[in-house]
Length: 225
Image 1 (cartoon, rainbow, N blue to C red):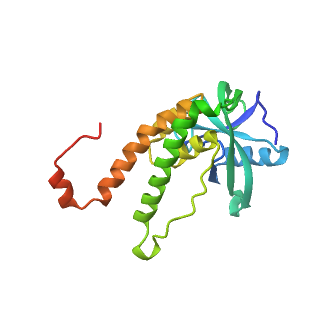
Image 2: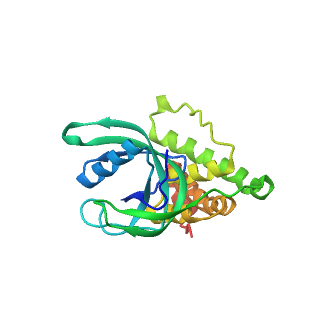
Image 3: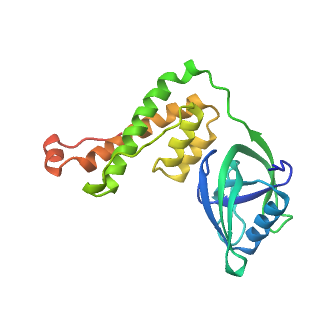
């Protein structure tokens, strides 16, 4: 896979892709069919970045300056030259300049490799984030299934702190703006620390969903802030 840093094909979307995450995409616009065909023919990666201004379909969309390199890992060709593809996030990038010379947007980029993590600097945040995230996933799973299907899932969460930070960011039910903020954080330690209060908030919301309404009334009102 080649990453053309001076002419990277760009796909602005209303979603945030994180490194190591998978994302299915339906490719139907002629400009993006052309882009994907080029990537397949030349074994190129492309960049996915959250739209800052503009629309996902038709017209020009201006992306945020930090996005994620996407590698195509699966392709299904459909009628009318449409495609279904699955991509995997590789690494973050920073957009230095963009061009509209092609039918689709391209950019000059700088790759943003992950920082080298010293285990001692993230141990506390990693342990607490892992505990909260595991509880969040189990409670969310129980709420989404019937009583007969609430067997606890085999989570097999990553032990690598950077991988864990990206997985948490990709799974959390938060806005794209908040996800973009997490993507732009330069270090794993800072990203994990930023995720802790979000996980605590989401666990509190799940607690409310699983607490009988009479119990909540008896406890009185409170603020999540």
